[in-house]
Length: 432
Image (tube, rainbow, N blue to C red; front, side, top):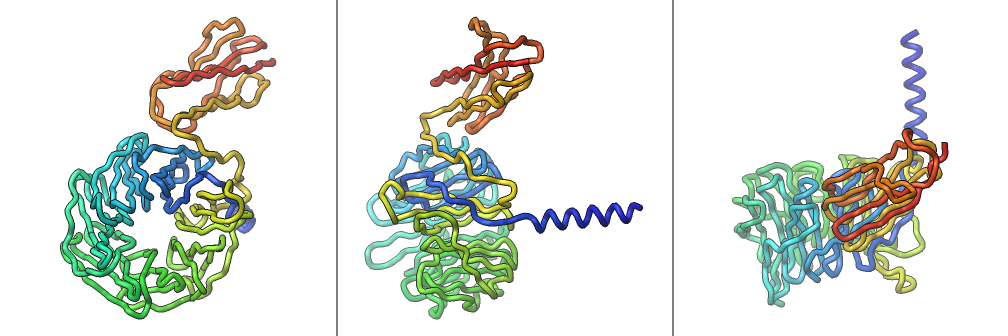
């Protein structure tokens, strides 16, 4: 009997798994600026960055995005967080590293390559609160001077590591453990790989004139990785970048790549196309993501094979549709795409309670854009305070509280949200 019940449960589970439909949801315009990079700390908390110093944050899986103040006007290329509070972002033009210790409520400049010549920091990674690496370049109108930076003080001090790759730009840094990492890059004609096995003290240079410059890459370990070369080739290595094989070639327009294991991966392209493979790149199939605008998919981020995100920009259609777009990838039987929006840094919001009218219990939700002290109170129809649901400090984001009115009679009541700069009240109706 137990075996029969187990078999029935197994069949039910398999049917549910097979019923799941993983796909891309409709895009949502979350910024008037082009967006270039995205990073999610977990399923709920993530950041997107882009043109004109744009930094956006979500704490609810991308339904609401907060515009944070980076303090700079340069394009931001990459962003990385080690926890919900501590993170770094990097920019072009001047080669700036920004740091926050409160989830992005405040950003400060930690490092600046140059204020006078073209510079960029393209990628940043921290293995912990103290040790981090960043890569970029200086360009003097004749020659690229690639830069590899390292900190062991949480970014308070950065040192330039010696290497032998003059004349190349460095595009991405891939970290495997405290000692081992791979950097990809190139110039107009060649691809380049830098490898270290001693925490960046020494770098092995591998130059490849056959594949062209490497713009993006995705490694699942020290040996196996995929990359986008010369804007139109998907290439794969099984020996840490010593040799590469071409898997697929398109006319033009490969922009981003992400693998979650040795089989499943995606490539973001121009023209709102995403390529997908489930066999390690042997076969790539085109997935046109939903939406009416033609977008370029600049970055992909996946937590696992069934939870992912994409960021990109539209340059087509009416000007009102220009800017940065966000897509989510997941089980379409469980998630929807409603109520995604962007809030300016100065805004807060108190949402309508649900249900309303209600019998005994209702939910009250509100949104704050900075970490601050908050009070949420209930008043009767005469304006008398009858209950305080919350009083204290909360992190930025959306918060939900329930009011149990079992000790109160039917009638009209009010709930009020108050912060240092915001006060708002709404009406609710209790019917028993």
